[in-house]
Image 1: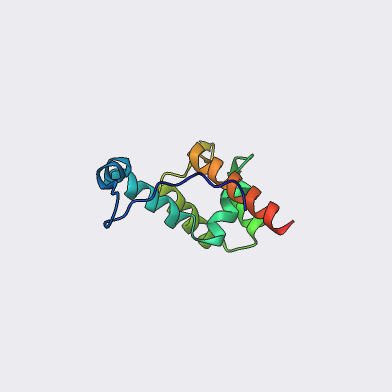
Image 2: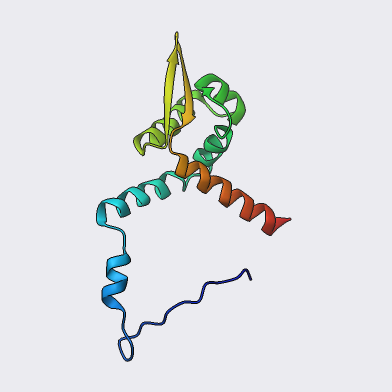
Length: 121
């Protein structure tokens, strides 16, 4: 087990830190944003898309070849990721090139991948 931070105990029958805890909670708008990101990341296909986009801008056709899935399915998943403002695209002539626009999500993906690689060896 990695070094865990020393946690402060709060209890209704002893020392309570309710006001401190409430003040530390993210506001409802931020919680909704975080919830939306976790919803978007909850699908293995969307995760695979995001890992493919870590270092590349990729057009839909190329993503279809990478994932070996129908174009309609890939487009739908990209639409979900755009809805939650995780990816965006740039147009170049008739092609749309997708990229990760949310750097926090990129960092989260790196952390999750590194933790799993360390765990599974």
